[in-house]
Structures are given as structure tokens and as C-alpha cells.
Image 1 (cartoon, helix red, strand yellow):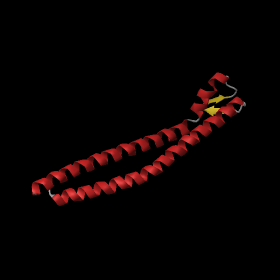
Image 2: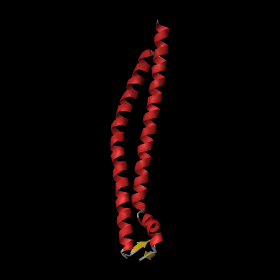
Image 3: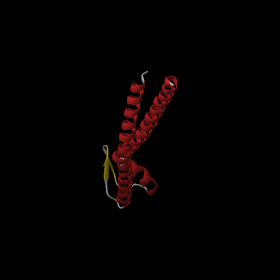
Length: 121
């Protein structure tokens, strides 16, 4: 490898890491918002089930379920909010892994650069 190629690769990795770091803030916000929305919808659904409000889930209508089942039924009713929260969490975690991978690549290029510098001496 040539020194200029390695230097360009290092610069590219630095730019990619910076962009990923800026994007992770957006993903963290999305993760927080979707989790909060899920919690809110779950609580509202639990209250409504307790108060006898009917819900349709699939082809079944649910009304006045036993108190011991309200929690589980509410989670099933709020599946779309839960899916959004899980997706946001997965995207956030994937970005962390991507940043770690980029940092490892940068470290590799820096090691190559140090090796090339010692050869040039």
C-alpha cells in the first residue's frame, strides 16, 4: 500500500465516523420517542380495557377481560407501537456496531500507516 492511499483511507474513515456519530443522535431520539409512545399507548389501552371499552384484535372483540389478562391483552393491542419501538432500538444498536467497525478499520489503517512510516525511515 502507498502512503497516500492509506492517508486517504484514514481521512475517509474519520469522515464516516463523524457522520455516523451525528446520525446516532437522531436514532437515539427516535428510540426514546417510540419507547415513550409505546408506554403511553399501553397505559391508555390498559385503562380503557379496565373501563370496559371494547377493542377488536384480528376478528375478535375484547371487552371487560379479567383483570389478570389486561396487561397481556393491552400488549397485544399495542403491537404496532411495540414493533416501532423494537425497530428503533435495533437501528440504534446497529449504528453503534457500525461506529465500532469503522473505528476498528481506522485503527487498522493507522497501524499500516505507522508501519509504512517506519519503512520510509
